[in-house]
Image 1 (tube, rainbow, N blue to C red):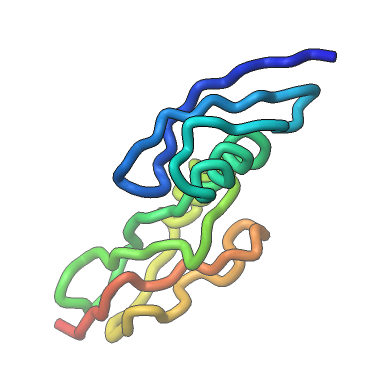
Image 2 (cartoon, rainbow, N blue to C red):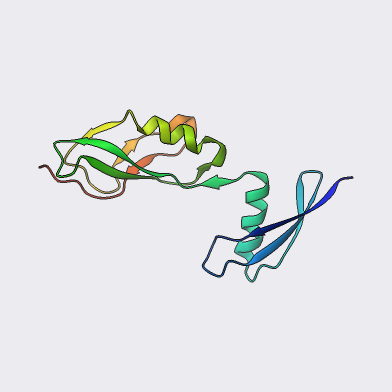
Length: 123
C-alpha cells in the first residue's frame, strides 16, 4: 500500500492555502491546510483529474481588431490544453460577434464550447 504526501498551493482564491494531501494508491484520502472546503476539493481534483480554463484569441475578419479574445465555457482537462489552444490557430470568425457567442462547439470532443470573451464590432 503506497502512501504519499503531496504539498500544493490552492489557487481557488487569493488566500493561497498551503495544502498537504495524502495519496494512497492513487486516491486522495486526506487534505489538510485548507481554510475552506474549496481547498480540499481543489487538491482532490488537481491530483486526480487536473482541469484548466483556456483563454486565447482567434482571427477576426472585418472586425475593429484583428483578433477576438475567446475563453472556454468550462474547464478542460489539463492534458488537452495545448492541443486545444493549437486548434484555435485555424479558427476564423467574421464580425460582428457578441460576447458569449459560441465560436467553437465542443472543442476536441471535450464537451466544452469556446465562446467570445467580448463584443467585436465591424470595422
